[in-house]
Image 1 (cartoon, rainbow, N blue to C red):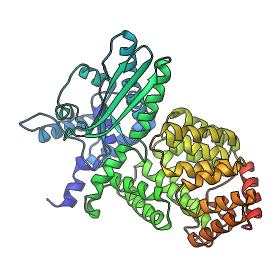
Image 2 (cartoon, helix red, strand yellow; image 1 turned 120 degrees about the horizontal axis):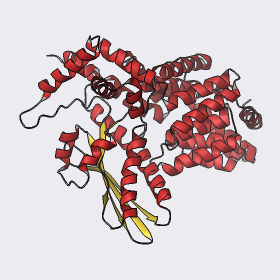
Image 3 (cartoon, helix red, strand yellow; image 1 turned 135 degrees about the vertical axis):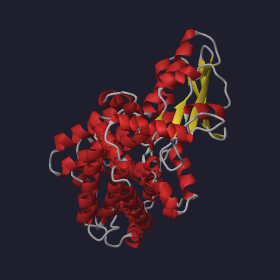
Image 4 (cartoon, one colour; image 1 turned 60 degrees about the vertical axis):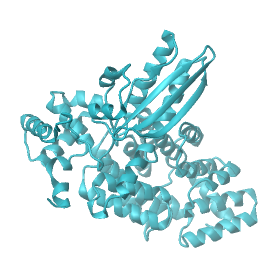
Length: 482
């Protein structure tokens, strides 16, 4: 069998999320029950099932159940009757073990249970992860099995284990991310907190762990990228192209942006229903348009609009797609609608650093109160110990709109070197009366993208919020970039 045949085998075509949906539906769960369990809408469940039926060439629930049973028999091994439905080409499956309470007292046992429960609930909101349910994980409370045994039982790629120690005044929480196949430890962290507010401890530790593990720059995505890099380019699947495309997108150079568009376009060609790949492709076009990487910022904006609407139509529960569509409503002059869309995105994922950072930019540049954006981006940086460089680019834009030019310059120095960053730094130095620094930034801007102007950025981003338009045009005039 060729590598092409392997890729197009029925089970290989299903993403991990599709496999999870298929199993739950075959077990008798309704659209609404599946949606509640996976934090997606019933219509998204219906879309997944339509794609699953098409890929497998089946037409009803009975055929789906028979297919899954056939896969179970086919994949069972003499050593263990475990079905490895997941593979290195798809999103990871992660299990969060009940945290071990190394102390005594009911309050600490409740905190240990609450941490594991909250981490499961928050990780389950990420469409790129498959998370084992809390009820399943309760069976592992108190067990001290070999990590590889746990991985086989749960069909998990990774699992998170944790412990809690406490005195009357101090709490120490330790966590480790484990490779469920090899048993090796991949990441660990320790959190020391005062023991005065257990809910605050639970919230802050959960936020940090989830943001380190999940998201475009999280540990799990990084591990998956390392696996993908070892494969021949021709054998990469949609999810792997998506992961590598996001990595290129976050570099933010002209060459990396072109490569991101290529990889993400290939991802949606392989799997036209991969909503998150559509959204990241849209962001790649937005970066292209707002940095002068393409020939036509209006065309880049058109492509962004198409990709964002496609992503939201495929997954109405995707907060990042909803945030982007909020910006598009601002383009149509519906500022109240834009604020509402971004508020809904934020409410659906209040502890997701990526959402916080994106909504922060929207509050400043699209519609809303830029001061709220300032609070949101600082919170994103605080709760994500691995805050990607683009967070600081967003911080620089927000602070510039607010007239905090010194903060804006400092933020852009930590951001990726990209034309729009040099442009904002030049304008900030101009507003501060720093002529020498202004000239350096203008020189770097011309070298990186000779054709980019502030008006191109306004068109390609797009910028619609009146305070941002005033701030950028005033800065452009002062810097001689108008």
